[in-house]
Every structure is written in C-alpha cells, then in structure tokens.
Length: 310
Image (cartoon, rainbow, N blue to C red; front, top):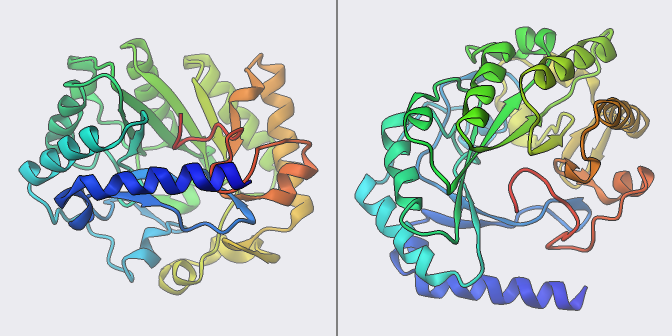
C-alpha cells in the first residue's frame, strides 16, 4: 500500500513540468474515486465538454448541471501544445482518455488532429471512448498510438435509455472496422440493466459482438446513481433498480450485481475470451472479493485491467 501511494505521488509531481497544460485543465489526473471503489487513477485529455447523445443515465448531466451540449473551450493549438508539454513531462508511458467529459468522436475534425499529434511519438497513447459510429478518419489513416473503445448496451436498454446514439449494431459494425484497420479495440458494456429477461438480451449482445470481432479488452459496469446525475436526469425510469449506496453513488443491490457479473464471466469464458482482460467499472472492493478477484491496492489497483489504463 505504501509503495503504491508513493509511486502515485511521484506521478502527480510530473504535472509541475506541464506548465500551461496543467494550469488550463487540458491534462488532468482523474483521482476522485475513494479507496472503497476500484478505479485506477488515469489521465484525462479535456479537449472538449459535453455530448450530443441523450442517454438518460449519463453522469455528464450532473457534471455540467444539466447542460451537456458539446462545447470546445480550448483552441486546437492550445490542446496540441498541452499534449506536447505532457509528452515531455511524463516519464512513464501514459494513456490519455479523451472520453471522460465528452464523446471522443463528437467532433471528428478536431479529434483527427489530436490523434495525429500522438503519432509524433511512440510512448503515450490516445484513448477514444465513444458511442459514435463515425470512424471514417480512423479507417482512412490507421494509427499506432490510438486505442478505440466503444460503449455498448443490449438493444432493449439502448431503446429505453440511449436516445439519439447510434443503435448497438451500428456501433459494433464500427468496432469491427477499426479492429480490421489495426486499432486496439476495447468494449465497455455499461451500464448493464437487470430489465426483464436481461440474460437473453445481454447474451444476444455478446454473440453479436463476437460475431464481428474479438475485443482486446472488455469492461463491465452496472448503473451508478451519483447525486447530481439523479438531480439533473430528465428521465429517472432507469433509477428504479437502485437498492443501496456506495462510495460512488447509488447502486443496484449487491446480490443482483454479483449475479450479473457471474453471468457475463460465464458467457465470456464460454466464448473463449481471455478472462484476465475483463474488468468492472467503478465497482466496490467488496464486489471484487465476492467474485474472487485480486485487483491490488488503492490508488493504482495494478491488477485491474479496465478501460482507461494500460
């Protein structure tokens, strides 16, 4: 525990050399989660804010006090300068998550320039997290320093709570294209809702995914009801499943979450997927223990191979 904390403090010290990159908030260390929640702290690339999709459960509703319309507070020149400073300031290889406060592909013109910047070096990588199927610029010019991660849900939950976003089959087809173009392609199935016949719906989703590609990594998650998210959500029908509180908002009951994760573990194992590449998003330490998983210690959680880290 002591060594992990010390290493993390040293990593934070590198931000001193970022200059304007840190001061303007373009490069930011995500470290909000408490020690009771497994979430390896990671680097955010805050190139934009908001999202054009209208997912009822989206935490960005709370983050931006109900206004999640896309906006771009920094010029592309400042973003690229911030990245240059970060590349020089960080000694250890890092992944920069561009999809924590926005959908990474909501402005392909800007993101294309950002992705090209990462190709100027070979130590750090860009993580795209998206519900978009607009991957044309990625296919046109394959890149070695970009990871593409698609956020997916089963068809029925998507119809209920993922308004405007491309349907899951379109996103999976986009994932197939970028995987074939040579990108490391990750999948997030999150949030998983225990709707009626949920096992059937999510098994169909898994078979649809694996009929098109084998993801490099899969991260699973169940609904998280942060206070501000619940306050600013326009449709709270998704919140009816909550039954307990945690260090990261309200959650559906422990036994239901465990049932969901064991179901996915079983199906992914049957599909021949490497189970060391499966992780849970912002889940409790207790749940990992219930599942017999050792994810290491706070704050780095070295054994957790989730979406936002190496």
